[in-house]
Length: 253
Image 1 (spheres, helix red, strand yellow):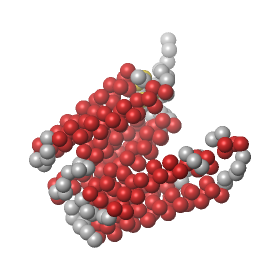
Image 2 (tube, one colour):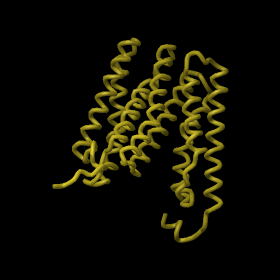
Image 3 (cartoon, rainbow, N blue to C red):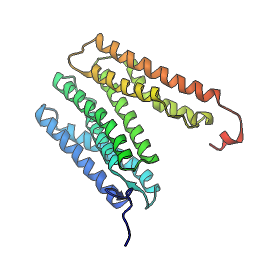
Image 4 (cartoon, helix red, strand yellow):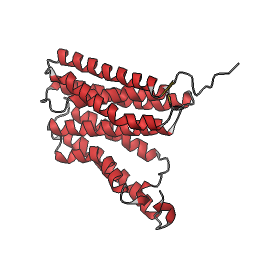
């Protein structure tokens, strides 16, 4: 009799069951956005934008999931991260909508829930012994997308200047530069500072969106978060540069 592998319990295989999870997440985002559209008297296009954004994200992620092979497991922690990604998709639907205190309050609430679940997926991965490189990357990309969407909303609703978009773009700029500088692709060591700054960036952007915090105070809060983020990226860049060596090892990285 085959004994169950604890890593397989509560998990699913790609591509069939993973695609079902993606479809369920897309439906959930659409229903959530539709409920908000009714409750807040938003345009009928609001849920459509959420579904379209989720579909694009799913299509973009599908080749990555397929490349993981038939042995890939979509574990419980990944499902929590998928829920977080679904909330980001609903927030993305708010881009282009005019400012309203009720919508801003709901956006701050959804972002707070997404941020709170960020601690759940990591804990769940460790508790169920299902931590993986994919899960860590999925979590990181969801965090980056959340910061980008929140920074766009902060600028769009005049809570901060155009400069706040740099908070959302910094991670992608770093990744783009690393495409041309191999030494920047060298793995970074685990860092409490990096985790704290990431949380601080999200918290300051949520506070910036909150209806109770108005300009210029919202800009000051957002600026503090951006300053911490720039400092953190600068520290990592200096660390990588100090260890850069023009060797074949980096050329193959």
